[in-house]
Image 1 (tube, rainbow, N blue to C red):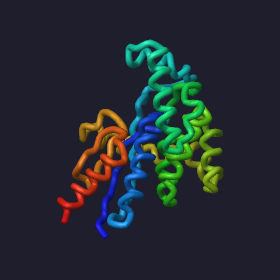
Image 2: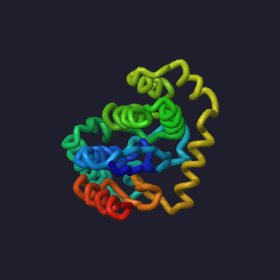
Image 3: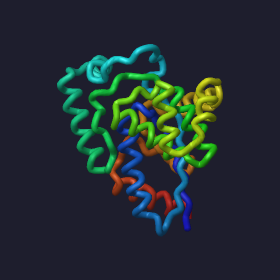
Image 4: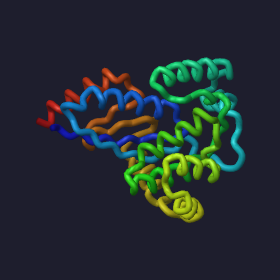
Length: 215
């Protein structure tokens, strides 16, 4: 069986990252009989300087992209429809507030040491887009940990400390220097870059081409 390793550069606050992974899952399922996939998540912050209280998402996005709130609402509604078709919970994505994701990225690293990195990432997507929870709030992060049946006492110790901060910063620097300026970004077998939340069929085709090259 051929092996494909996928490094995923993403942010918890990025809806296309959640959609992109759900589409990737479908592509991996289609090729499960031919390929053995492994996935590693890497940190990226869309809003690294964010601190303090968050603001409502729609005005924040309108300011960032120089568009009206109505345009942003329409774009978000389209994403909600796409997400629903993929089985993702984006019910409250328009009610969320801007927030810092650094501590959430640290928890993803911690969960990764227990083989639960992807589940942690998905739990955080669900909290942010499905329940409009502030994923910089430690109580909300601990609820995600509890939901996965991981050790919440250890997670609290991680959040109170500086653990995994260096790993997150190294991730961010590595991929910025490699030219990743937008997420999601999928690096296949350390060689090939697929940018954006591509459709499952596009990913299947890309994996098959890569598989042929590595034969």
